[in-house]
Length: 221
Image (tube, rainbow, N blue to C red; front, side, top):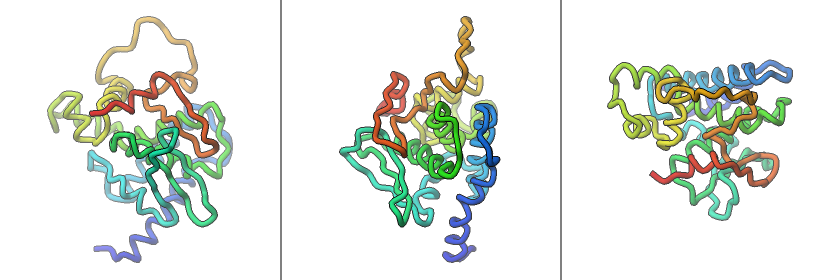
C-alpha cells in the first residue's frame, strides 16, 4: 500500500504528466480531441481507474495546490483561476451534483491547458470533450453497453457512470451506440457545433456562455 507521502508526490506529477501529452504548438481540432482523450485516459491510469465506471472525482479535488469551492451566487456552471498560491475551481452550488462533477472535470482541463496556446474557438468545447472522456471513456461505455455488464438502458448507464442522463445520452449518440445520425448533412465544422456537454464557464472571465444545449446538463435527475 502506498504511503500518504507517495500519494502526494504522485498527485504533484499529474499536471506535468498530462501537460507533456500536448505538443508545444497550436493544434487542429482533430489533434486537440486526440490529446484530450489521451489526457483523460492517462489520468485514469495514474490512479488505477481504468476499470472503474464512475470516476472518483476526489482525484481532482485532492490534487496539491488545488481547491474546489461551491458558490451559490456564481452566474455560470463553474470557473477556474490561479490565486497566487493555488488553483481554485468554483462550481455553482445550485447545480445538480452530477453536473458539478462534469464542471470540475471541465475546469481541470482549463488548468491543464493553462500554459498552452489554444484556438479560442476550441477552448470550451475541448474542455467538455476532456470531461466526457474522463467521466465516460469510450472503451468502458462501449463495453458496458454491448457486453451486458449492466442493464442496457439510459438510466442504468447514467447511474453506473455517475453522470446525468442527458450527458450519457449525448455520449452514447456520439459513440454511435444509439440514434443514427440525421439524414441531412451538417457542414458546420465540428469545433463550431453546439455541444450538449457545454458548460457556461471560463477561467478567463465571468461571461455567461448560454446556448440551448447548455441546459441539458442542468437537468435534475
